[in-house]
Image (cartoon, rainbow, N blue to C red; front, side, top):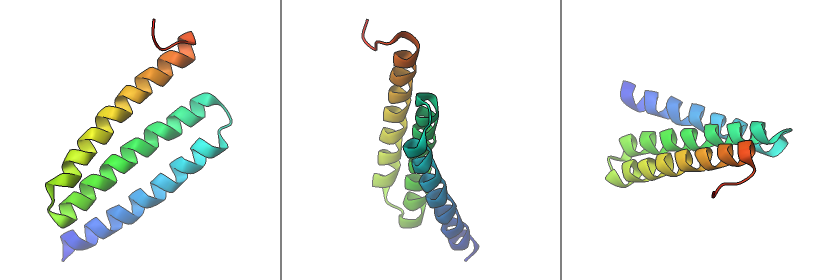
Length: 90
């Protein structure tokens, strides 16, 4: 009962956080703000997948969260390198 309620509240809070991060990506105004919004969005999506996996008991959601985490980290590093140097591949 309490765990179900806590997971419901967590899903709603993470959905709101994802919407706010999407708004930051769309509004900008600078590229750094958009990258920060993207970081927030991938972490929020990863956590939303984990909470959904806890609700359903399916391992698929945990594996998908791991893939989202790895891809988000790689994209953050690539975008930061692009902003600093202007190129990704040396």
